[in-house]
Image 1 (cartoon, rainbow, N blue to C red):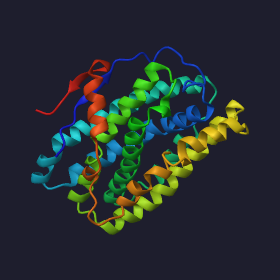
Image 2 (tube, rainbow, N blue to C red):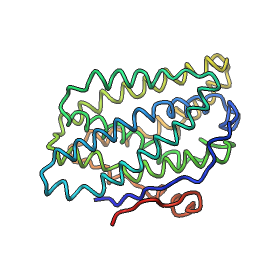
Image 3 (cartoon, one colour):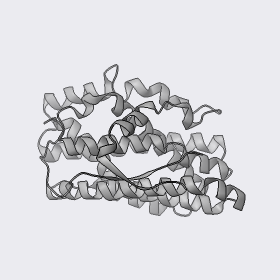
Length: 274
């Protein structure tokens, strides 16, 4: 069981930010914006899935996982609120959030499925976000030159994603989810997640007039496909999820722990176990 602390980020998100806030880099900005656009609806789905999963457990198992789920819900609810504020600025800048619309339609269409499939989808997506979070904490160049308050936002979110990477996975297993469905759903989520983020990133770049610039695609290669890029360097961590004996705790979270320890002045604790 993981003890999860709920934190309030101490940054100003009322003040508008520049269009290319991530170091003036069009691709990095468009990519991070696409991720943020997916978060409010996605975080609510994760909250609902894990809450419903906890309710389905026998009383003894509910008691075992209740505190961790409470912390998970608190962290995800905070992420949802912060990114809603961030996305409000994107709306004012003229961006159209198609990724949220697609996510909403997909969630509505799958409402009838067994709750364990929703837990499997949540655990799979949390694996992606945990991989990305750890990579970003270890690669400061992903946010090089970014506006400081937004840099803090993304690193704080990353640290907490790594921190609660086990919760949905553990509830899925406690609810009787099996490895075959876990892997099957993971493969589907891989395709949908990557396609959705790519489409929204391209849409953001088109809106900016930067889609066809060489500098945009040089940046895309460096961030995603270079030897130490997000996609190319994390294939092994992605494949780990397919193993029958896999558990998210097998992946290192030292970068998350270090960032939270060294940046305690950036947030206040509003809730913790016990």
